[in-house]
Length: 206
Image 1 (cartoon, rainbow, N blue to C red):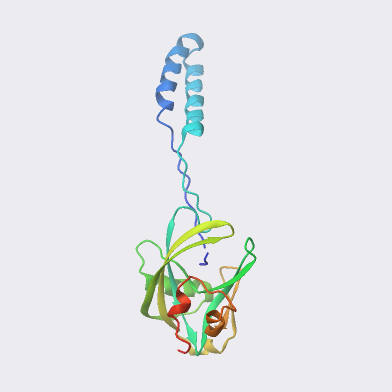
Image 2 (cartoon, helix red, strand yellow):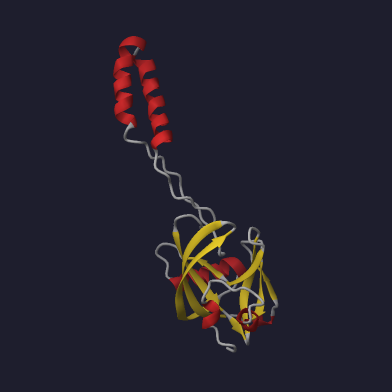
């Protein structure tokens, strides 16, 4: 879900093409000296070594970071002059920051569908998704690693109006808390809001 969130790539073994001809020559040469069984074993060893030495680097993905551009859907939910955000902390920068709730858009899923799913997973709450406010490109550094996101921002409302009376929300799939924060705190720089550019899109009052 978070900015700075989640995902892992399945490991793919990429055997170097240089390994095959080298292994073939060695197997043929060794077969006459060591026997076919030992020759084949030696060929396998060479192929594996060739993969280790000459393989291409694979994209690194930790918590959605690395060389992958990640599409996100975030919900802008207002309570008067306050915005519902989760609180995060970057240990490397020693920075506390805030971001609207939401998360990654899965393949075959629209941004609005992703937002509804994320709120059910995070707060066990239903939201009504309104107009798309803006699309922001967010290139950032979190915990010392570079991330790149395309963020779809949607106006959203809780389907259950009683939820607006709650001051804090425990996020179910993560060890963090969501709360209402005055937009004025983001405007005057008292608190940091991500993604960059969102503060300028928020009016002082709903």
